[in-house]
Amino acid sequence: MTAPTSGPRPLHSGIGITALGAYVPDRIVPNSYFEAHLETTAEWIESRSGIRERHFAAPEQTTSCLGVLAVRDLLAHRPDALEGVDSVICATSSPDAMFPSTAALIAREVGLAGAAAMDVSVACSGFVYALSVAYGLVAGGVARRVLVVGAEVMSRIVDQHDRNTAILFGDGAGAVVVGTVPDGCGFQSFELGADAAGGPSLFLRGAADHLPGGTPMGSYLTQNGREVFKFAVRMLGDCADASMRRAGRQGSDIDWLIPHQANVRIIEAAVQRLGLPMTRTVVNLDRYGNTSAASVPLALCEGVRDGRIQHGQQLVLAGFGGGLSWGAAALTWWGGAAGA
Image 1 (tube, rainbow, N blue to C red):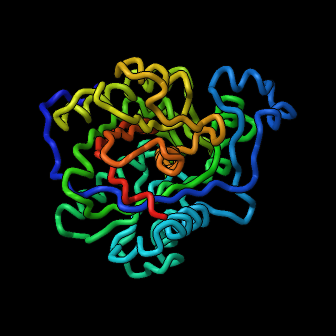
Image 2: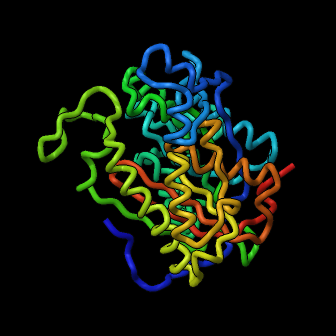
């Protein structure tokens, strides 16, 4: 599984992120929570993953609920953010239902009933994939502005008695609006890929009881941590670098890497591969764990709101996950997206 090595193909500037918001549930679950029912310790979990705590949704909260709250946070900072939005995309691996789409459920609750709505299911790469679709809709004239949400209730699709997965995942949501931004800002390239040969290393059952080739699937997310780690260490840095090369830049030109938050050691390996210091990446997995499709927008929102990410800076958003899949987006940040 390798990222393509074709020459740079920059996108037209002027389409980017115009607003953003985030939400995590109130319940904080520290590593010590797992000590009572798993053979583990809080210190072991943090040393292996970098995670100290994560948030779990309340029993009455669904993925669409978290997505709606992320959009409301977006509106609190930019009250006019949804004006002109005519399409909604939700990246999620934990949809409320196969249909209606979680995107449609969110759209109805935030005043966008009737907008085109669809879910994107690419696990932890889903938010970057959804951004690429949103870009294409706007660039192609199909949509004026697109609401993109990454939302997950991972605590419901992970076996809480499986030490290999339970300790890693949390719940949350992030939301952005994709539309026109000033010239010189916006998306420059996307690097996307997937290879089902790695599917048996990370999967969640759907309508079938086994994958092609015979791998049986149970009721919960299943992960071969060792294989996914090896894949991610290489692919996170490679796809980020490839997205920059498509934009006619180098990996070392990145001001901020916004990576999928799965394991701090994976992120450390990626920045080393890119020739960047850790001080140029946004890391919050210590507080949120792996929130799958929500992790990139949560980290992006945090970096913008705390002032680290500034107008005109070069960003790369990068994810990897089930598929096995990968995705990266290079963009120049428009400072007006921060809102009030």
